[in-house]
Image (cartoon, rainbow, N blue to C red; front, top):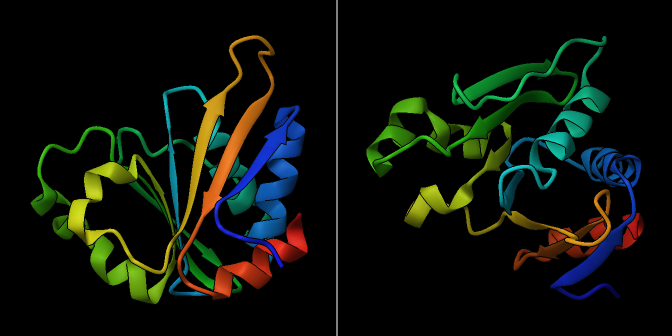
Length: 157
């Protein structure tokens, strides 16, 4: 049985994409993934790979850095991809409609520290750390409290 936290060393962007696709295959509305880490460590690459794997046809998946939220229609329902880096107040999160999306959609949140007390307790947290020696290597720490993630992550690792 996989335990939380789980630490993975991924050697390339392709390995990161494969993990994102595998996790994406398990997602349903109401699932939230919190993507944390410094700028340039792979959060958007992970989210983009996951989203593209669930889209019915190929489309561009831009970073939501300036739009704050990008919404995609999939066979599983909506996917909300949010980048909260530029937010300054917790009230802005509610204005975006994210709190409703947490129950009705699949949500991928970059810079989840901006959520404060609004962070869903049932979320899967993925923390990205770039390896300072090997440029393409990332260390991901996956953690969760909701038992649904244990079986989903166990299948993927």
